[in-house]
Image (cartoon, rainbow, N blue to C red; front, side, top):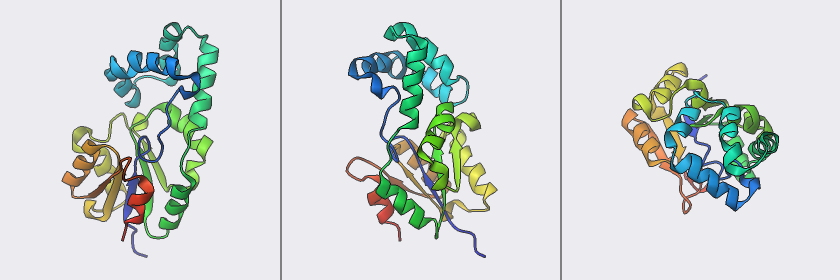
Amino acid sequence: MSIKPILFIDFDGTLCHDRFWRSLGQDSLRKIQDALFSSNKDLIRDWMRGMYTSEEINRRLVDILGLSYDSLWRNFVDDCKSMSVDGNVLKKIRELKAFYKIILITDNMDSFDRFTVPGLGLKDYFDDIINSFNMKKLKTESDGQVFIDTLKRNNILPQQAILFDDSEKSCETFNKLGGRSFRVAKERPLLHCLNELK
């Protein structure tokens, strides 16, 4: 039996566009954006590298948002569990599994494995799920070592793999390894890119 080529699919900004804490409303989201994603990007990257837990990050936000920890945590978990993915995209992924090994590869947090994956039933659609939190390394770090290790583990050459990602840096890193990437964007959503596969 021949080995299937690999399709790598990113999560945030590619498969899904929902945000943590979105149910708290725009005012709270702005405060969170300022506290975490604008002024403290290293903290977010370290969270994605497995150096913090979701509980630790939520505790940092209690005073900023003026909410109880229990309330904040409940909203966070519920939002992680209920992120939306286009059903047409999942249907297409299921069809493509006959021809490709499909791997979800994401720079993400512990909450992804704990809440989002089971909440959305993602294991039903992907042959493997790789999260930077568990790898302790982002996709583009060490010249794409996470990609290299995954390809070796599957006995696949980079030339036999395709990446779908909204990150230009991730696409460039993957292309340098010898793979082929599709840059997902608002005007070129994931379903459009998947339909371009030959």
